[in-house]
Amino acid sequence: MTDPSAKPTRAQQRRRTEEGILAAARQMFAELGYDRTTIRAVAATAGVDAGLVMHYFGTKDELFARAAELPADEPPSGTADELSSGTAEQVAEALLTSLAKRLDGEPVASLAVLRSMLTNNDAANRYRAAAEPQLSQITAAIPTADAELRASLLSAIVHGVIIERYLLRLGRLADASPDQIIDLLRPCFQTLATAQTPPPANRPATDSRARPDSHR
Amino acid sequence: MTDPSAKPTRAQQRRRTEEGILAAARQMFAELGYDRTTIRAVAATAGVDAGLVMHYFGTKDELFARAAELPADEPPSGTADELSSGTAEQVAEALLTSLAKRLDGEPVASLAVLRSMLTNNDAANRYRAAAEPQLSQITAAIPTADAELRASLLSAIVHGVIIERYLLRLGRLADASPDQIIDLLRPCFQTLATAQTPPPANRPATDSRARPDSHR
DNA sequence: GTGTTGATTGAACGACCGTAGAATGAAGGG
DNA sequence: CCCTTCATTCTACGGTCGTTCAATCAACAC
Image 1: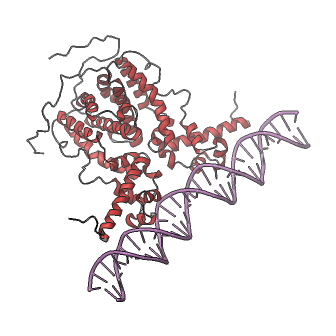
Image 2 (image 1 turned 180 degrees about the horizontal axis):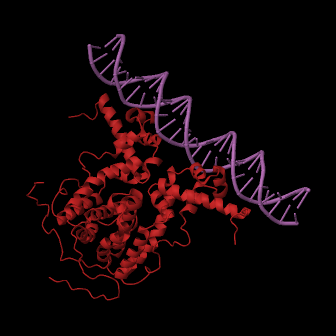
Image 3 (image 1 turned 90 degrees about the vertical axis):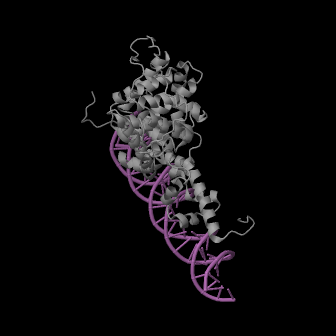
């Protein structure tokens, strides 16, 4: 039993501060992105000196890499589990389930990557590396010739929703319940995964911009 | 006739240089984002001195604001035009049309905003200011109680697709034709806008691929 | 106890950034 | 033709950043 009143051993203390630094880094990277996050600010938040951060992590990039690692108990949100195989319908549903999980608590490490991926190459590659296997798994399950594009669209929807919910906090997406969101998304995902167009077609055969009534 | 061999007047030259600076700024903001774009680098690209950029635009923020302005001939991609009113079906179709237009040539100014919106408050506000009226227009056209959430989802999908195509250049989304993309998206948009869930039972409870045949 | 390791700090360096302001020189109006 | 205007450049200041390094001091092995 670890006595809380006992003086922590050196290794314990080391791991404790290192974890504190990582937590502060994750938080700041997720909120500010890579560039605007300062080693000095991370150190201050963690209550240590900036030099110590360098001494432990060597480089800001290395700090980001470590902060972007997902905790071991949180696998990359829907990998390989149920998603790896199955019919297109099953894959679509698995993707919805994984999205639902991310929608009530995306790990801060993932948010750090997402926040930085548009302005930092390392973060962009990290995002690509995480999205690519998922992408090819979805592709493999879709029977049509345009499977790759459909899978890309599914991925774009997932990330668009997460970005608007957590990073932009726009509209109702920020506070809606995960279940409500995925219920609305389910027909979309099923339609994209299984190539069947659900309603009896809604094509604007002729130019549907004919709009004689210009009244408001 | 403006004689090209004639020496440009001072006002002409001024406007020419200013436009060159703006073009360089737009490009760099779109590719690197606000933080990584340097006034010195913009000036160098435009072939002028950094002090001149300051003299004309006063501030980096002001330069960004001017660079983020859409050219007059490119309205904010689907505003108010056809989108302002109509049935939910029409609004969904209009949104698709506006997306198609953006998919074969998003203006660089918009990309500058999109690239920077996750790490720059000004860009985020600019994005919100552009998305909000569109959002409420879509909301107004959707008859259900969760109209706001549905509109948010539509917006999230649009922006997710554009981000992956232009900013992340991920998967097939980067090179697919606009028509192909919006054809795949049409059922999704129609389903989200008009609140009808196409197949009544799509739950993956069992593997029953029994599909309710398309009743005509 | 003594010597060693290592966690932690503080100060400093060099680079780069946004920005300011003086200097220059050609255009333009009277 | 002269004097003003202004497009343009040059130099520099203050600040912040990532990073380095010597110094300190408690924990620890022997």
